Length: 149
Image (tube, rainbow, N blue to C red; front, side, top):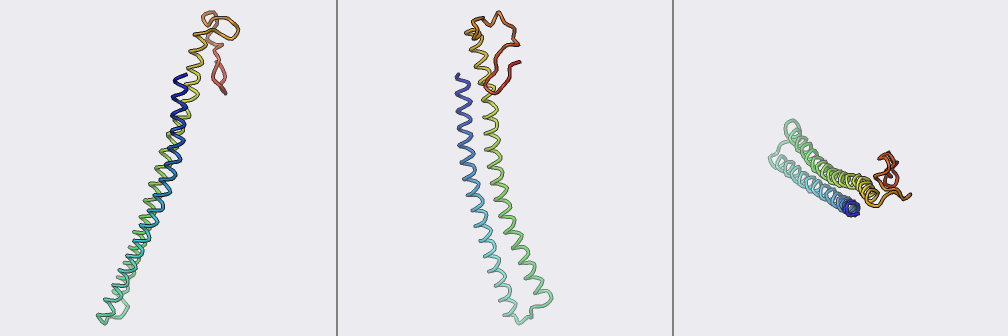
């Protein structure tokens, strides 16, 4: 039964890890949104500085000055989107890693239950009173939800 208890403990731990990973993923997304907003605000200040500098110089907003502002706006948007995308990927990776651990732990439970059942079967004999030595291996009982072979 120790294998089963260990497997069940791993599964419970993995379930907790999934919950923690989800919380951490939500925090990653919030940090990504905050970083994106900081980048956008900094970009807006930069655009304001460009417009102010161009106006101070007495240059009209046409030609290369307009292109400079358009390029600054484009780079600002790209940086903000990159911050959000990075946060989303980090959150997704956290969740996937935790789900994988949970699936792995869950997959270990039936195998451990079966191995404990086979050990008990050979140690104490079959429910009908015959010892395992007197029966073929085809009659071994499987764990819950599994069929014998």
